[in-house]
Amino acid sequence: MTTCSAPGKVYLFGEHAVVYGEPAVPCAIERRARVTAEPREDGRVRVEAPDLSLDGFTVTWDDSADERPDLDVPTPLVEAGMGYVNEAVAQARDAADAPEVGFDITVESTIPLGAGLGSSAAVTVAGIDAGTRSLGVELSTEEIADRAYRAEYEVQDGQASRADTFCSAMGGAVRVEGEDRRTIDAPPLPFVIGYDGGAGDTGELVAGVRALREEYGFAADTIGAIGDVVRRGTEVLRGSEPNGGADEELLAELGRLMDFDHGLLAALGVSSRSLDAMVWAARDADAYGAKLTGAGGGGCIVALDDTEATETALDYTPGCETAFRAELATEGVRVEGA
Ligand code: MEV
Image (cartoon, rainbow, N blue to C red; front, side, top):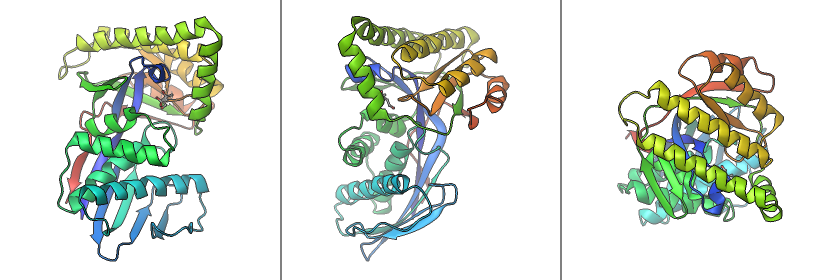
């Protein structure tokens, strides 16, 4: 039996613009999915996922069977959860050259599902690592990231970007630009996350930005301006001491850039009333800066604040379902127990 965990992520800068080849900086956060894998000889896959819904459920299925379990949780969530675990199992079987092996799998996660915090990437990354290790095979982190991307690609019908799976596997801050992906130095960043309990439709939001970009030159310029913000942010991070504290000046500059990025994303139509309300609550609480994270339309904001003030303010903000602190996760996928 092997347990591995992998972190979720927020975008410090650059979502949406990254679709057009601009750079982006996703950061891993200390909210993890833990996956335990135990090989079984009968070839079946049994998954226990107490955190995949509020009530928890246990589901046993055969990955060749069509039937879906009768459960009191939203079907798309169950199917998505099953899809990611299924694809992680397929990748583990392939990597370990054990096409017939079955597994008992347990998924536990402290990353809200469907909130744009990379929960599916974290489950997939941790699942591939746990599955292969339980069969005595140790993959490099790059290979886990690559296989997790291929798994997400299958489940999401080719709509996956490599950012989430790479960031979850590697940990820390990551810079993604086209095909270039690398980890970059970053000091400890005091992230506070506000979640409105909803989620935007990523496909629709990306299509909306694309339509604006095609119609208006200034929308294309806005996307370019987001790229400029990210380039400036990367320079700021480059000047930081990776293992030293994050000084106030550095956090203030990153915060200003996050505020700028949020304004540009709002101009592109991907913010929402609840996201704006949470961003303003964070700013009123003297956070260094705040922005939506991910596709937008609903979901999460991320703020930088090393005091309790933003979390408290978000707790009292209408439309904010939950707020929590999540430090930068310096470690990506890791073994929790064998
Ligand atoms: C969604 O988390 C991030 C987007 O930039 C889409 C993508 O990069 O695939 C909006």
